[in-house]
Image 1 (cartoon, rainbow, N blue to C red):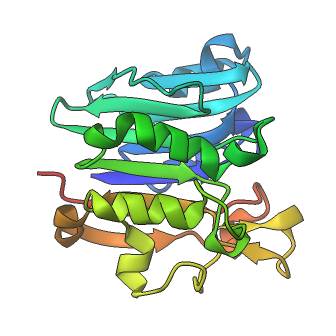
Image 2: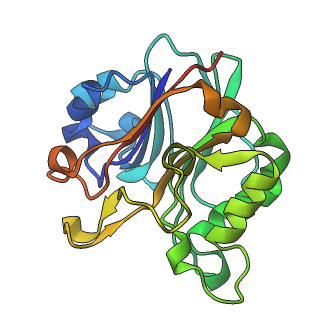
Length: 233
């Protein structure tokens, strides 16, 4: 099964055709509009098997699946943190789609939002795929701060969940050689802030892990897609 996470930087109705070439089974898309409230008929037709949430009809996060994928919402409690979609796939595994947001609380900005979600749902995350735009990297950890990127990685590791990028490339946190985001689409401002996490026992089932190229994707978004092909069974 192929899964993709990509922050489309808005207006997915004009960009979803670029995703189709990857032939992914499940697509986690951040900053996309709500298909139900969109007037674009082709976009609405394409999004025929999905879950979407957001504060505005113009910008939220969606889980979009092929028609033959059975998708249902888990509705795991988020303790007010944004934005997370927990979903059951084909009745045999769970995923969490992530788009961390700015918060009025300095302690719970961006990665702090996921830290809150992790505290509430830690027991459910031991064998699911967690993927999305975390807006975070260990390079931005504040000294003497809790619920930062390092805390999240450590707590996930304690329940047997790891980053597939870091497992694939044997890289340390903050030492990534492959960006997933270019600030202002500037090649001189690369960052790694999009991740796919899964249980350690599933790592051996990964058939392929890759990040899209800036050459192919920067013309339509400041983020690159992160892709995993994994044998779920």
